Length: 476
Image 1 (cartoon, helix red, strand yellow):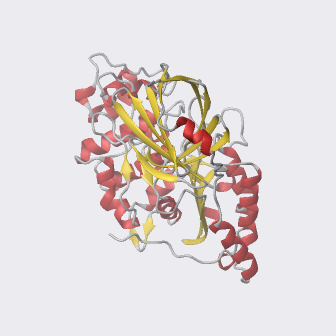
Image 2 (tube, one colour):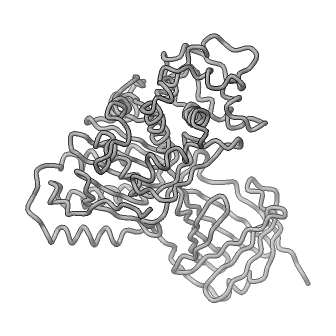
Image 3 (cartoon, helix red, strand yellow):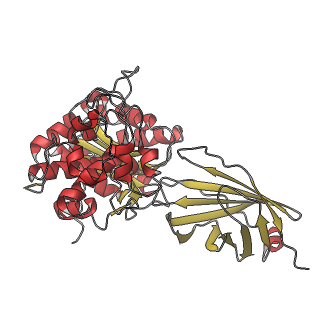
């Protein structure tokens, strides 16, 4: 099926000044916020769109927890089809997965509790579930004790969303992605989505969906239009209303936080009457009903609230009645959007330094990455590195003043650029452009010794890894 592109128009025609978008871009740049893409819609039309090179419109991006909103929508469709009810007990779907002794609280756990993350767990059980030695995540979910009565306490719970995916598969006989394909993905023109699976072959649900920025925008527009797409009701208006309304309180101690305005069905309530699905490191689908607007963003950030603050400060207040066209401002905006890019390394080539490592192999000390040896080839303003993890071989290549493209198993498309800092220091920047992540490796060569330091732009853990040491294998 051909992708159904959203219509494009000028910001002014829909009541938004081009300068407001420029102000937003300026604010993002001044705060050094790493966005990868931006798409602003009003009334179903794209007013502004841009990708920070080397990210590009055709690339799918890892959504992380923004995936949850799609999983909940699948439940809404199953409810519409009367395959399930949100009051159905979770234990009834998996009698074969229950432990012999089960706390009575489990008998009260329903689909609605999974949707609202009020399962009764005292802490997120996801790591325990995903770490199940036998790979049976459903069984592991029921093995995690409930500390509260279901429905009484909000605890963010990615494993709960996984269970929604498991329920879809149990009642339909289809994986979540296959269930959604004819009901959501195909009608919206979302081509070739991918979704990670657990060891048991169930889509992860709470993370792992990979689609483009325009696909995110279409999903937001579907919600803004109360479940209707191009004249067809894909999911009931009632479900959209429930999913996008505060179902439970998640207030802790900061009423000004966009993470403490309440939670719907796998949707966060926002300030200013907006709501959103979001995912780690800056993946957003922001829906602003009062403004009839949708904003889709992907990124690689360590702090997510500054992005929302910038939307509230520079975009949300500026939506109004249609304005006279402003060709000069619109042209400035279009040029700015076309020229968006993330920093590239200077690309300094050092012929003598390159010759010094060309053909050399280094045995690496034990390290968290499992790299056992590195071999270098350097010529014609390119660095090629073969990294071994035991018998596993990984080919990497970087350009100077340009990116070189490669596919890395498990991490997708990667763009690498390099520079020589001095005669003994090589820096390589790898951008994994289907994910939020980039890594910068600094390699210091001193005689027969090699030290590698790696930093990452964002991660769930430390952003800087312990230094990796290696020693050159002498062949003379």
